[in-house]
Length: 322
Image: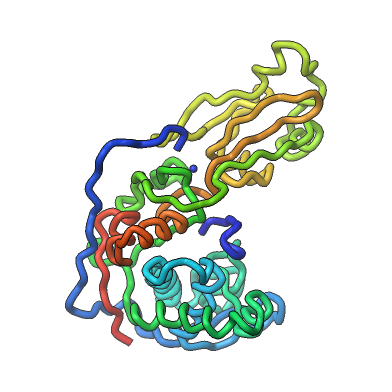
């Protein structure tokens, strides 16, 4: 997941004005089997250093509440619930084999390893006692009203990548990771509701050098040479930097983002006296469902099936058989 994030844990340089047709999700009628055990999650808790067994639907309440603000519209929360359930069920089907970090567990509560999760006690602390019950039961409703629903592509569970905000257009999977995934295609995001999509942060040249292994601080900033020490040599289909050359070294934009702690790979920069000011648009890797985009679509009357069908190309909603 987006290792990434203003949305309670955890890119488009040009506005797209062309009309488009939202793809729709077809609801599967027959249940699909995805592994022999899909009712109980073996969840590794980092702070307690133990594995907790929890019912899948109960686990999902903690995930949706951690990954998306409870203030979001119900249809957006439902879309998040289906994506989170899909991610969980796919990992559960491996029997813990695909989780080398936590042997014997299906999932953990650290968003850097997959999906975030918060207990009821942590949610009370986050929301406060008075709002807790309204928020909790709103999230529970989103989980309950999508109970057993997962996303499939050609009969197989998908990897439902999602992120906070895309800045107007999502990314193709191969522009961020190595593999082209047919349902993780770049789409426009016309209703993104991120209230602060653009932010600027200044990083000293010494910090950039330490993170990237470069020698920018040794270059006279006042000279024209300094302006050419960092440049984009390849862009993604959405116009974001894909590959950069920094101090004659080539870097994937994703690596620069991670090493410098930037909000997204949709960034520009300006050299200052002893620092670089990076301006980012959006938050996260930009692949799959844009959470603020889902919020905007829900506010414009779209239901969760249409939201999911827009961000995951060609998918279906199927029921799991416990």
